[in-house]
Image (cartoon, rainbow, N blue to C red):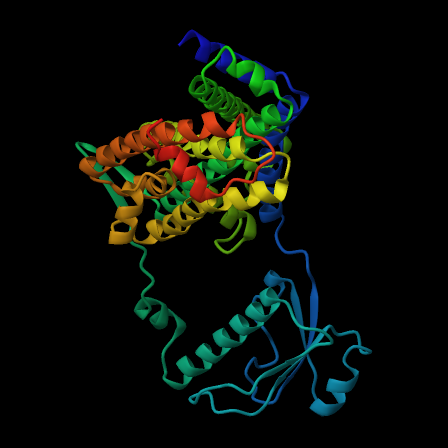
Amino acid sequence: MNKILLVIQREYLVRVKKKSFVVTTILVPIVIVVFYAVIIAIGMSGSSEKNKIAVIDQANLFNGKVENAKRDGSQYVFITGQSPDSIKEFYPKMGYDYFLFIPPMDFSQRVNNIQLYSKSPVSVTLKSKVEKTINNAIEQKRLQSANISPEQYRSIKSDISIENKLKNGKEEKKSVAGVASGVAFFCGMLIYIIMLIYGTMVMRGVMEEKISRIAEVMVSSVKPFQLMMGKIIGIGAVGLTQFAIWILLIAGLQFILPFFIPGLDASAIPQAGPTGGMAGTMGMMETMRTGLHSVPWVLIIGCFIFYFLGGFLLYASLFAAVGSVVSDDQQEAQQMVFPIMMPIILGFVIMTKAISEPNSPLVVFGSLFPLTSPVVMMGRIMYDVPASQLITSMLLLVLGFLFFAWLTAKIYRTGILMYGKKVSWKEMIKWAFRKS
């Protein structure tokens, strides 16, 4: 045990003292928070694009005026006394960005012959704005022909929003489905990235020691199993340290963010209309805060740590076995590691399904199977997973790690001292199951 601790200490200190570790640990939270701030700033800035649209309205749809046109940054100019063909040819020279042609039509029938001319493809946003403006105008015409006032229409039209309440004993919390899905996806995605990055780091660490012949010296005083476990746990501790620092830095930077973006202070928000961009953005942020408040953070953090450690230890042992049988041939390493990456990728694919169908048979199987459970279970954890399934998943993950650690240790002790020979998976399996 003391020898394993010595290997853990060596692996941990060597990596933590590297300049790349320090730079990455400090830089990543800053990049995340800056990216987050830029998204908020862009959302609060509103639309800055100004479009001048020439309109020939032969159907008299707008009656010479478009309501609330300036709100979406568009200026509609109605042209009379000219043919559509002449405007179609010369509207750019006349100072217009686009030309909207509305031919005569029967508003009671399906409308599909309105045309918007441009020099290049219009953006999806502008097309959506113009379509919404025309649809609103057609609705008004149809209401008038049916002798229905806008007030009557608004009283008839239904636009309900179901509020999801979480009941836990006497406590009630408002839940937001989008936030719950986002948290589940983020946790699963993080586990997925962790297993790939740090598993590959273990493989490269083993390869480096084998190429430099350091492993030969260490194996003379440390058993191969002790060397492998020390390396896996040491690199896992580096990952936990890095994530702990990231969480602390991101939390600290969140308090500094309002000083750089004063608009984040709710008291500083101007009284904009319900459709205003800034008010809409702040409303969305408030919804996110409400949704995050309902998240069972103790369960999420506890499961995240367990599945991070369990998933990392299981896959790191497999990556270490691959690293022990390859030398400096990167192509050979990629070929050998591909079968290990397949279950991780499969777990991510099942996790995307878990967010929409958390109790489907495939998702339940994926959350129990040790090779996919670290990713899939984090995608399910927000949706009241039965305690029996959660305990079974954790138990199978622990047993899976012990089983694969036992197998890969037998591969490791043979492969770490083998040079100049390409090893196949078939041969590695023989090493794993042979008696001596």
